[in-house]
Image (cartoon, rainbow, N blue to C red; front, side, top):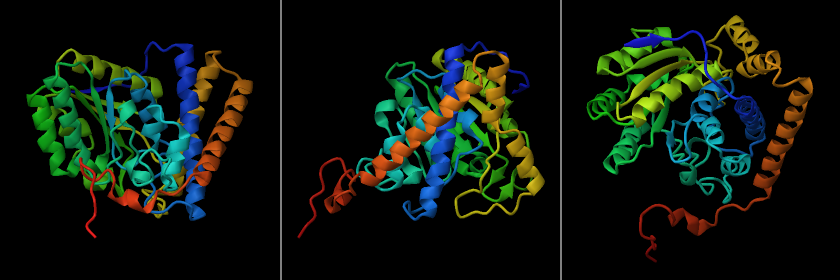
Length: 336
């Protein structure tokens, strides 16, 4: 049931395309400056860069309604921003401040914004795949027509929960779209060394009788078109879809990973195909933007991210008693 798509022929408006480009630029700048803040020891814990994968999140989330849901793994900053999170609470969360999107207690891997339907940031590999099915089950039970997008890496397909959940989602025709961000590596292990089948739609779609799409995830308009088709199926009650979105991360698995398992030529080729630059050129060729617009966006984005850093650094740390908050439904009162 795999459907290989190679050409993007979607209908996209000029304003939508320009908005997507700017959003990708915000994500890239956010990640680059956040990494610098980590190197200055302003950010602790784990940190997973999203640079290079921006079209996957922006293109797919860009076709959702405001009442839909998004859930992802620990490489989550890009998805949060694509869903509409402002950079300020994002950066504040990285710095562990009370003004952060998770009140400074979640950190890099646990961004969360329930008001926007962004349900995390989950650190345990594959754990949220089942949660996405739960969200979709709740939608169906309540008679709604919302959908849930669920993102994970190619390595997560090897988790048992993936197969258990895909089987249930297919049987119950749940309104969930599973998107594997196939960046070619599970931590430091290439897909060719970790999967007996390189066509992940066979493992994630054909095996469970649902539509599977294998696409160039770095083609943002193709990503949007494919997701829109899957979303329409889900809203119509036709069940889940699986998208194998091929992409590439410019950085190592996490900030502590130098990525020496990759050839320099491979990385250089990926940078030459930088999806943000590619899309800039596409929009320039259409006459929708010019160099002046790009320069203006670049300066605006720099200012936006610098303001987010200033906001985060000036924000307060969570009070000590906050450690007992948001743990249980009822307030927890420690015994003396």
